[in-house]
Length: 245
Image 1 (tube, rainbow, N blue to C red):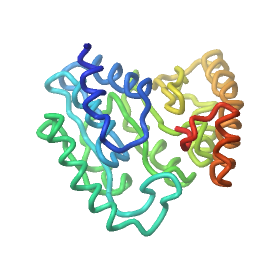
Image 2 (tube, one colour):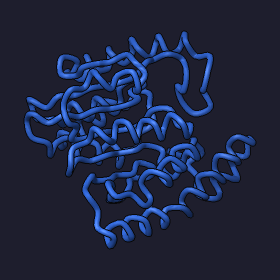
Image 3 (cartoon, one colour):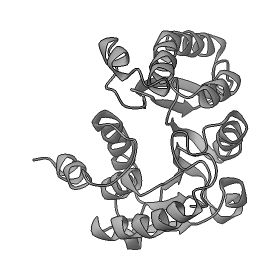
Image 4 (cartoon, one colour):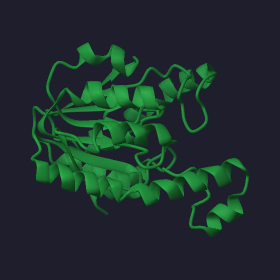
């Protein structure tokens, strides 16, 4: 069993929205960074993704997990009123890091992302955004934190081409960007590389992202059917029966 497979299997009981392919992408991007690099995660929930990022990271890589665990934007259709559950998430998150043997490697900032900007002093090599999915906070996370990513660094965004708010934020900030090139996705986790783009690169990146819109439309259909309690129909159309992520 590979080290990635071992870590992924150990997280089977950890709550969170992350497929095997998405975890593999996180692992690959984190493991390729040298000592001295910086990894930032926005939106940690119970630690599933940070356990992967930290387990893959070379010694000497700085890891920051940013999540207020404040009871808002907790998960699908859980926007407000989950303070009690969020406090439990806070403790479970720390316990999961401990169980994975990475607690001492991760700087945990229990803050909203815009309040934590001054707590990460270095240029970022890898930024993973899985925070609030509404348009305003999603675009704020991508814009503000993306500005801290160094040239050649990577941006991973969860629920791309799945969440309306996140996809709209990408349409405005990355579809025709001078700074970001789209490099592909694992289900709803999109990957971008920061670079000063040429017009030809910008066009290719734009067309590649527009090509994902049918996938986005299908995810919206799944969500409508699941919200309407029509899971058998959603599954007949190819859904797993779970909220698409």
